[in-house]
Length: 257
Image 1 (cartoon, rainbow, N blue to C red):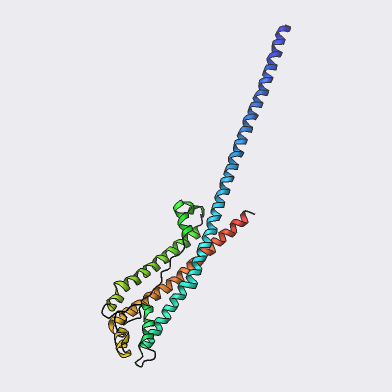
Image 2 (cartoon, rainbow, N blue to C red):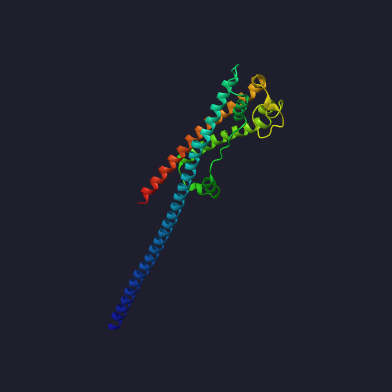
């Protein structure tokens, strides 16, 4: 009888140890799982922090690039185009006068403005690098992407007019007019190859108020006017991009405090 109760007691003790072992084993598993979850969370946090740093670096570089572009457009390109247009208008006023007001040589200097043009090329190195690497997706801002799309649409139109100006000079309306005359007659050049600069005001005015001249000069004036308008639109789009980028930068700084 005693032997029976002893077996029961031993069995109970064995079951108690097994239960404690199971509790211990389960606890170990839970701790391992928690450790893994914490490690994954830390890794995710580090990755997010790394992406945030990359994002902030891109934003800062874009701000620097577009500030440069805005300054270049406003203080170089628009001022140059304004000067071009004002000089062209002055030329039109002077050439319409039957009485000579300035020297023919001065008129040729003014006429040179119809033959020259600028060609603005924005600094887009940061944007192009982010685009090619796929990191542009880090910006994840719909307003910014819309602003950039508008910017490129205006810049494409501006570049088309730059190309038209080159075409007009070398093979378009300006060339069709220039090729009928001796070099140096229309405008002053470094090398004229003729005595055309000795032409009288009367003869010069007669040529420059003819149909070919009027069409060529008016075409050049209209293209420069379109360039001027597009430069102002491009400056507006640039400033809108800057405003969005600076807002993103400010929000990022607040979130990281």
